Amino acid sequence: MSAGRALAGIIVPIYLAELGFSGFRLGELFVLVALVSAVMSTLIGLASDRIGRKPFLVALPLLTACAAVAFATVRSLPVLFIAAAAGSFGRGAGAGAGAIGPYQPAELALVTEVTPDASRNSAFGRLQFGSSVGALAGSLLAMLGNVHAMSPQAAQGAFRAAFIATAAVSLAAAALAMRIAEPKRPVREGVRKHRPHLPSKSRNLLVRLWATNSVNGLAIGMIGPFLTYWFYRRYGVGSAEIGLLYAGVNAISMTSTLSASGLARRWGIVRTVATVRILTAILIVPMALAPSFLLAGITYMIRMMIQRAGMPLRQSYVLAMADPEERSSVAALSNLPSQVAMGLSPLASGYMLDEVSLSMPFEIAGLLQLVNGVMYWWFFRNMPPAEEIAANEEIPADTDDSA
Image (cartoon, helix red, strand yellow):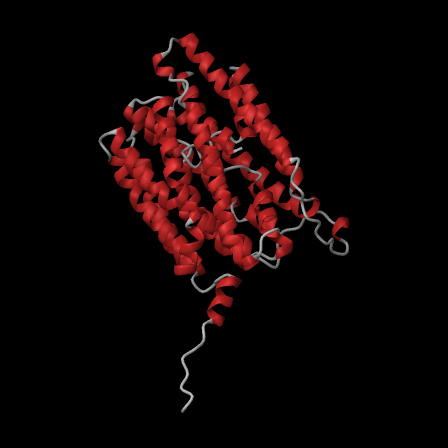
């Protein structure tokens, strides 16, 4: 799935720009994608706590494959909007596109269920590493067709081939998911008689996550979906150059995900995530103001290396703190305000890109993410996960036997 999403994250914005989409029209598309993805993630999170995780790990790649085929064969505007929403094209359009998808609540809950607490951070780091490998492959595929150097007819053929490749790897993901052996979970008395319910045991955690994720969602919605389009407009580069940049980012930042568990053991998971968010917020501004694609790409690469260390820890923390019976629901609902906020900010960002400045959305997003990092530390600094509490209890206190 990561390979297909990374490829689509590069090709879709450039393809739509070539069709004549302005920044504001792209913003309209990204609003629809974000809102539909929010609904899908929520429903999947609630339903997978009842019927299991595996069905959604098979069905969602099939839906993405259908969306990619639609992009390859149809140019009708309503069809493109519907297909983009169904395939979540436009979410995470940068080098991190591989880790995005409405299936995530089911995926993360499944990984948490089969992993001991002491190994959870490492498992999520390896999961992110796998996503980086896939995103690297998708970025390399995007380099095969430099549409800037092609005739219009050849460019259309290159776009069509890219969408067919997206469909192919999505079908492969569905086939691989068929082989997943999901552990059976005990069914609570009466659970089959009632519809999916909102988490109650994890309510305090959810409220705090809603507050921090709402601010973060506004920031992500302003820059995430537009990143490929911004490089295309700001520096006049095409899919080959952007694919090379994203491939380099994924290749260099892979080790960051594997170092996440070590950072959490040393500093604590909350402190690490908060620090990562603050650093990535600061780096947005010099990237937006860079005078050349090379300098912007280097800054973006450094930013993504730092961000990759925090992403698996953030996911691991949410699943660790949630009640085991509500993990998938919490994974979905914790991101619901973020996804709604992501659905609101693209219109403002698209307008600013067209009418005000190519850098302003990035500057505002940097400020929002800085606020988010401070909020995250403040809300969760006194809520360590179970493995950190156990580790602290194992440290013997200094005593004086002669006293």
